[in-house]
Image (cartoon, rainbow, N blue to C red; front, side, top):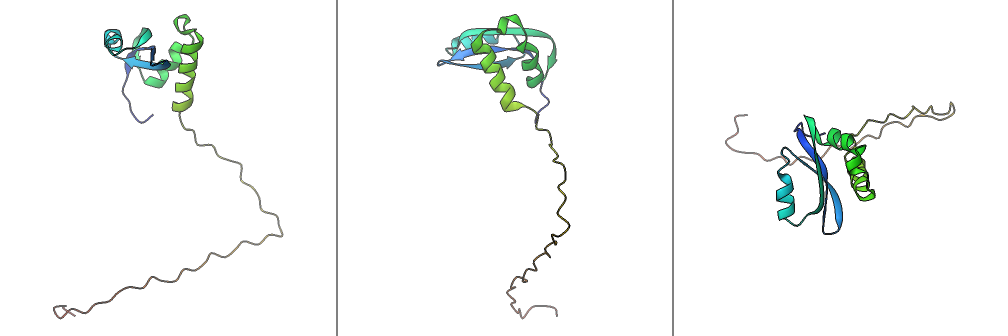
Length: 121
């Protein structure tokens, strides 16, 4: 992940008909979400602060988040934010009859030369 921020409170809420995951450092976040029009707010506090991705993984198996909507929001977040692993493909061997192409030579770029009367040389 690009950041090392940690959170203790994780959950899901519905805003304008779509569910999204939420994270905060305090359970009082429920009041702010409700004030801004969120519905079906389900938040839980973990024992220790963790990163966003780890927290969402932790709540994925909890019974509070067993609904289809919550699981869909959690899975969507996990798919989008999955750590990017470097997948190395097995090297492909060229056939013995194939020849390697020589690298193309590039022409040097034209350089504009100006003469100054004040130049030391």
